[in-house]
Image (cartoon, rainbow, N blue to C red):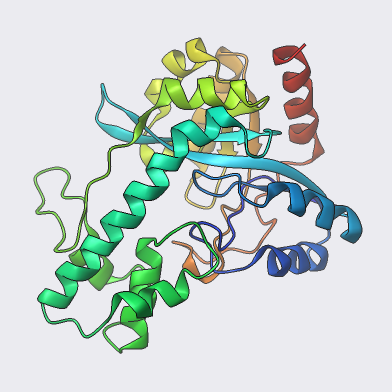
Length: 285
């Protein structure tokens, strides 16, 4: 049996509903599945119950869009075994959801003014049932209108590039005010959960590990589709140095993923699930 500890549904920026993800999990013989939607715990309680009916254990999780303000880079924090609907999470993350949604609306207005033949209603169609609009939904509308055939190709870079390292920001790029990583870790612990650093190789957040550990970080994501062997080795070394457990996951987004991956393809094994639960006991005696 496989373990999947990083998965998104259409409640955030995934293309698949939870029911579709659950069906894929059964096909892939996944025994433990963590749902880690961005900045929301909506639906997690129902997912846990639905998983029981399917014989798959659902681990209620989240991925918080945080930031390292010293180094000026994103740092995402995964939370496992959190309490759905917890006030600490909602107070921190609900403004992020609203800000992202409004930013995407401004991006669509910018694209329309620039001559792109899409509408906000068209984009909203792809975000239906979720917590708000993401860039992937905008790209889906652009694909529908024939402007591109890829979610993450040249057009995506032209429209949404962040403009780092002296590059010009994309036409429709809208900056977000992320939350401080310490606050993300604190909120996860307050919600009864276990905080883990997500894909440090992707966001170059390895050097932030000592500080994150001092805030209460318990684990580090070693296995990830965008991690190479050097990233995995570095994560393993830091885990040993700072007494962190290692996790992994496919970071599944369905067709909205940056890289085509199969659910359960980066399974860390049951040891990671056991480590999460042991940490939960020690953090929340």
